[in-house]
Length: 119
Image (cartoon, rainbow, N blue to C red; front, top):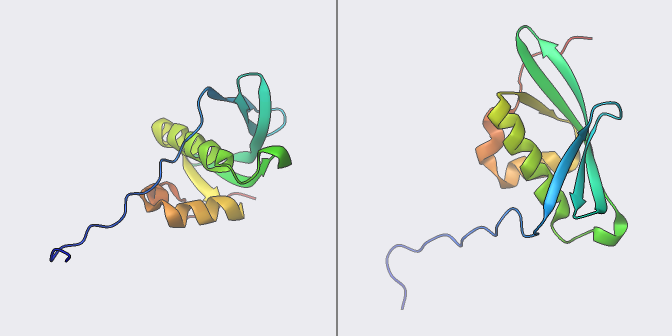
């Protein structure tokens, strides 16, 4: 027997790995994901100034094949979006993984920039 109000299933945690860190490499235009001393992958980006705002184009998420399908991409995107949100930046999600992530976690939709980027 079920009650009259069924609860939605809880979402899995966005980050399921310990000892993760990200390092921003502006010369290469990417944020790298590391677990201890092991390189896991990166999220490529480009920054644009629009008026007084910074808009970050998230270009592609690349995770080393040996770490694929284990939640590392989700962890990387979560960490990057949380930092951009804290810094007050907007995003343009060119990366298909980031686009899918935003559909799954709509709480990040307010970060999406809807204006025109400079050429």
